[in-house]
Image (cartoon, rainbow, N blue to C red; front, side, top):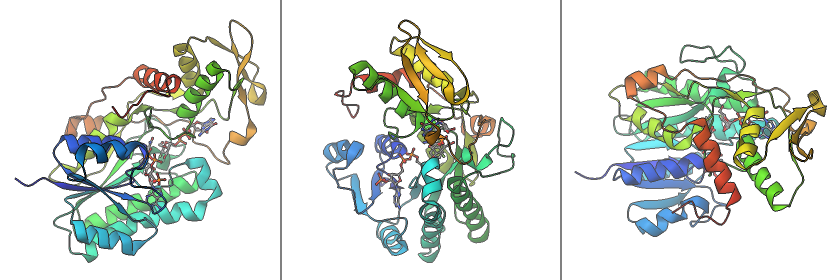
Length: 347
Ligand code: NAP
Ligand code: G4F
């Protein structure tokens, strides 16, 4: 039987790396869309170019802002599966570039769905959309597929737009299109300016003597942090079903940013105690009294989401999806990677 072909939009990101690895292991031919500013030996994914010598792995220029590039590429490849992981994915930056965020994340998904429809690929190409727990905003946790949406940022609004369009194109045109509503997931490939990577890389810089302390914003925010490797497996499982349906992926356990900090410092051998409150709160090295974590008001958002904890019962029951990584596994992997920057995690 011929290999299945998958197109990954957003292949240079964290999830793009793990999804590529998973699909290549399953025998797929994987095509990745990269933006014109990227190089074809770009970042984490260069390992696949070496190993697969462009036989089962190829990169193509395109952009979610450029409908023609998407349509031509989808027409050329006629993929069995498209994973739209491409996005301006940083919530705080979305407040600074809201128009771009809506264009790339909301209209970008529409352009993909329109391409499938215009090319008559409704019966051939399955479509995965990267939806997010941010769409729930501050509705009470645990959030499930039945919880209402209440976006609190341009990013969340852009993703809800895409989420709604997926449902509309599924119902109106019979496209096998699904949205995975994913809660936060991390790894040593997490982007630098998300809070988990910022914390663990900050700790590594403190240990090397490059900086004295880390500056953070809202320490009280609760997130449900899983591992990206578990979550990309769930994306694939959603596309293997007979009927398209949306699923939540989450661990069901919430932790504050403060607790992520404390545990990460702990893994690096530094015990933290918290003193003061509000903007004056400080995380001190218990042994030396030195300030390790300080609050910087610049890192607070105009609106934040305080309590995201997901209920993934439906994915567990219908997809057989399981989380193999614990919160502690994620922290130890990330701290270890940050402390050993020379280690090549592509191997
Ligand atoms: P990420 O590391 O930020 O990766 C985003 C990817 O999108 C990158 O490859 C980026 O390319 C690409 N991209 C950005 N703008 C684009 C455009 N205009 N056209 C084409 N590609 C573009 O994100 P991630 O953590 O892997 O997450 C994957 C997806 O899941 C995103 O859509 C994110 O919003 C969503 N999501 C993530 C989480 C999470 O916790 N990680 C949770 C829920 C949903 P460059 O490398 O060239 O910038
Ligand atoms: O790590 P974060 O930037 O992730 P956030 O905002 O939860 O978004 C991530 O998860 C979403 C799924 O829920 C994805 F859709 C999205 O694409 C992205 O992957 O921030 C987590 C929390 C926030 O409450 C933030 O206010 O940490 C708080 N925080 C405190 N200090 C900080 C900082 N966040 C960042 N990025 N930097 C800080 O200094």
